[in-house]
Image (cartoon, rainbow, N blue to C red; front, side):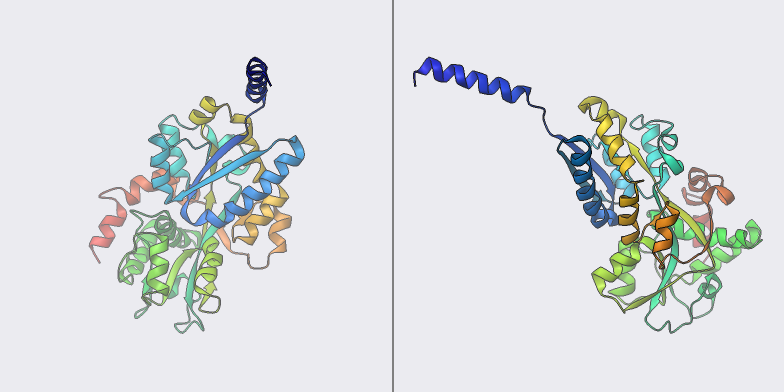
Length: 330
């Protein structure tokens, strides 16, 4: 073939390649223990997106502590979506102008397609007879909990312990007394949820671990079934798992429609069923009823007794706040 003809054909091929639509790639920046859940979600979404649009799409994941991930996105990590385990981390991004100020109104249920709650793990056979919150303040019971100053799990455990007193008709003064007594039974605060689980199961510290319900499945997968029992208290807090489109990134990439489609997918029956299999409480009531492990618990929200998670942060967890005072007085 003559060289000019080769060059002409090469130019045509290059032009055709340039005109071919590039595969959209999304990055989901999420919290640490959601890794296996989103592996299954991503596979299902990719298949559904291909079936409904005829287009291919790629979804990558990034996982670490929720607050650390929020800081990374604020500092420039190009997430298309964030899927966190606490609204304060998305509020932080909204304050930075990275996600929409009204992010809660962009998707149903305050933009939280799944929830969880706080419960207890005890050693097999429940040797200390732990049944409810009151058992955690008894003499001789050692409680393993994460530090609420550094951990989302730790904050939700603290708020659950405080709020359950209020839910039973108690005052804030009575709630303070209960929580102070509870943390006197905590031998040492774990850095985060994973560290607390390691203390309890690997270092054999304590009699009971306050844990997020959604993490029970991963604990059994990692450490083996039959080593612990999950105890559901009579009252606990709703822990929402909020999501948002990262407006800064999608505006730059032109991926807004795909990012929205991804988060919309989390509300579909298929995705809600995947969530339930991973220990997350689906919003879809029909699917929730399919999974008997989600036993009924009287649930309250952070808004009911704390105004908001942001207000709780200021009052209880900021330096010099309520937690610092009661922990120093142990």
